[in-house]
Amino acid sequence: MSSLTKLRKYIDIGANLTDLMYTGVYNGSKKHENDLEHVLNRSWESSLEKIIITGGNYQESEKALEIANIDGRLYSTVGCHPTRCLEFEEKATSPNQYLEQLRDVVKKGKNKVIAIGECGLDYDRIQFCPANIQQKYFELQLSLSEEFGLPLFIHCRNAAEDLHQILSKYKLNGVVHSFDGTIDEANKFIELGYYIGLNGCSLKTKENLETVAKLPSDKILLETDCPWCEIRPSHAGYQYILKEHQYVSTKKEKWKSDCMIKSRNEPSNIRQVLDIVSKVKNEDPSVLNTHNSVQQCVTNYSNSQPLTIGTITTRAS
Image (cartoon, rainbow, N blue to C red; front, side, top):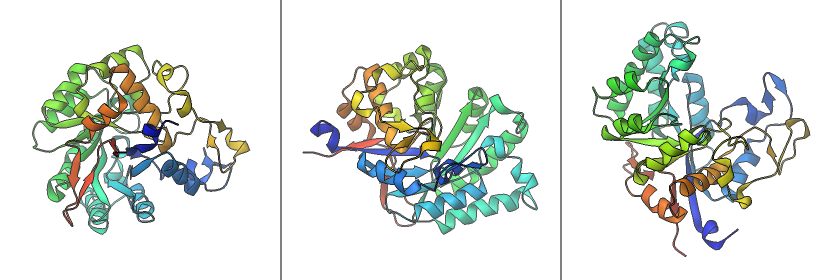
């Protein structure tokens, strides 16, 4: 590993560390012991400086905060994913009561919760939640962003037009994460003041890479969205991953504490995302670092301590 790579520090703005895969459970079947501690140790050894754990519903938001409290380098979000928005009606006495539960997690995590989400719109999976229900409860969650002055961690799948229409009614900020849309869609979100989050799902196709190449470097945030969105050999961006960032993995049935699990993404793979983005944009990774650390800060509403929510920062040698 080069000396500069060692000095480079990363921030993963979106890690689903509450997922049962990190407890060894896959599709309801226990394959190995809980290895979240090992996953985190690999992250710190791979120069992760901070990790933001995504909350996908009330229960996950509680769990994300619980995990965040075990280490000063961990933070979390609070929100309800669009495909789960029926929970506002089915898992509480009323939608407002569900919102109040989310609000309570934000209050409880005043030093740890730094964004509202994952929330947004997903029209690719309306079989889980109708579009009109998604829209209704996405807007309801925006009140939390307004109330606590926290940025949004936004999900968007095949819904850019409606998402933009809703966001344009508010003066909020945040990131449209796991972006896989067009450059025109990205620019519209950027014009509203939002960043564009990139992970393996943003780098699958030639068209994806063409979009990334046109994005303003200072509006890009990097993430893994682990355990999802791994970068596979069949993806267009895979060819640009440095050999030193291609890690050994094993099948879950042959789990070892010092080895990644095949097809289960981890925060350590944030390096692969940077490799691809820097190559596609023909930009030195360290320069991209600098771009990504300029304005990407949020202020923790409880103690006014700035926390970099951008992708990476580079330490001077």
